[in-house]
Image (cartoon, rainbow, N blue to C red):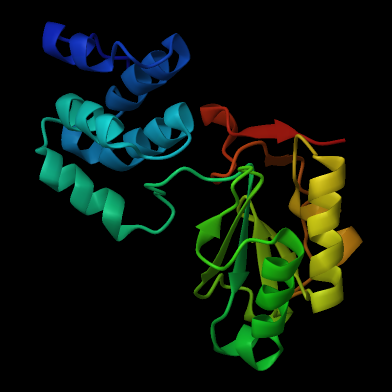
Length: 218
């Protein structure tokens, strides 16, 4: 599909977005015969543009898709990865579902909260860390599982969780990748990985190269 040309109303709504985000939104809309079908990728662009899904961002998505603001908000509030509050530089998510719980996830979460000084469900005043517990990440064989900006680390102990936090705080890596963090802080994996990860996350959103939220790692 070819990129769409915005109508005057759509152009007025999206003018607050960067040129890159406007171009990406145009390309996304060009992929769908029905603009409403683009609501989820456009919300993702909105989150990258503003750091989280803002009320204004949802209005832009509504204008581009022809949906009501309430309909867009219903989608954004249903999926947990559409964050609607400002995040820290590093989003640390500890899985506390049954497999992880039985193998000490609560202790891992407590270690992360203590080392960061940020309680579960909150963001630190310095915007360095956001800490949260999450439900199953689909790697039960590698429990307990921790995500940093949605990059996975399997088999994390409380001590390794503290080391991970210190590494993020003191080193401030621009890119966080599953492969590097697994080597440094992980142990048991669900299965042997067959393909090497060549990209990592540069923002507290799922890493996706075409959207500018991922970067290659050495």
